[in-house]
Length: 515
Ligand code: C2O
Ligand code: CU
Ligand code: CU
Image (cartoon, rainbow, N blue to C red; front, side, top):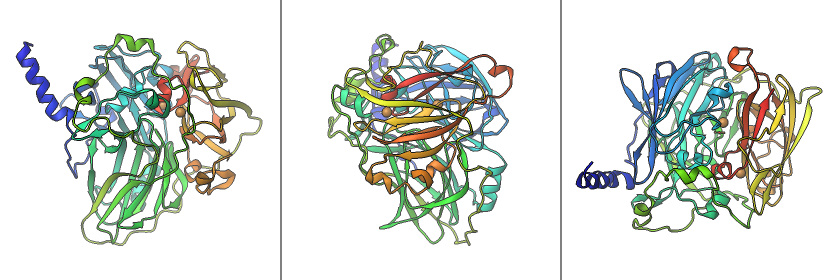
């Protein structure tokens, strides 16, 4: 490219790139069956603001930022093409996969590289997702827009939609991210030491890639499957109709449907957690989804660390920082976790209908219980002045052996978050788990502990990511059974880490090997 063309291209992308994403409404995100994906391209669309996307190549056509649908038992078999200037992986968050397909970052795909990924979807119906997981680059790449949704369906899911008599268009899958907007520009991802300590928090929400997102739905039940795709921000999700907080029903969590719905007027959804909810739109004109204000409980102070990954020395950041940093509006205030944030709106048009009663039974999920004879494994989450946030005082090393668990074993994990700390959404690859009990929950959050054992409503479901407030101790029940199939033979390595992505890149992660 000669110099003049290079400048023209740069300015063209500055126009759309550094500026705000188009505000479009009512667009239904493209639904793609997993079996149709031949290639998944990971590409940067805007080198100025550093925005990226997934492009699904279906052979006959290409779909940007697809929403993947899989029937339980269907297979994904596609080539991942890394067109980024950084290493990447595609991790399928929440799925039970063999190590070789988990995309956990042990084996990143270099810039310009490719890798074939094949697996069968074995999990219950629910909202899962995929995102990059290369050590030291995860936070930057997810923030850049590399978040994909994967909806798994099965008979329970079919029965629920039939029971809700869902009008077409009333089922939405939404990834809620946040970005920093100053003036008319997106601030590129450039965390300072304070951001590395608390996590990168934005001042505007981006839902399925759109600012001020809005969807049109019909009166009747609306089923929303929502992912908190923010790097670090917690969401206290609620729905407003004018001044009224509209009640809704929690149907499911990370790993699928609850046994029965739970009525709520707000629900915490932390980074990487998902909720499946039903809300009755009958008799309303519109609903505004918001994150209500809450006490974020960030107690950690002290030496904050930058990213220390040696790999980062070899690859430039995704954004041309200098350009956007000088955008009008400047740096502005640091946005705070826990501040109220509008998320998206639903416009309700059409003839009123009679909303059918909510099904009383959603799945055969049983009450969480500690399996008899299960061993208890104890872990501590701490802040270390020099190392930052650590699990069991051990900063992450990719080559560490980490924890070993026996294949097929049942365990209870007792995880204690230190009192001078922050909320840590802890995530385990490969295995869903159940929450048995919470202890030490602070006052303001304790009012959400409506279930036996001090648990929150979301603790009733299958989880793969669970929040620990400072000073809390959680007891989890885990089952390390793996499918008896060649792909799962031999030791399988997974990860347990904080899904505050700045903490994850900051080494708050451990390996776990199923032997
Ligand atoms: Cu959502 Cu280790 O990942
Ligand atoms: Cu994961
Ligand atoms: Cu954390």
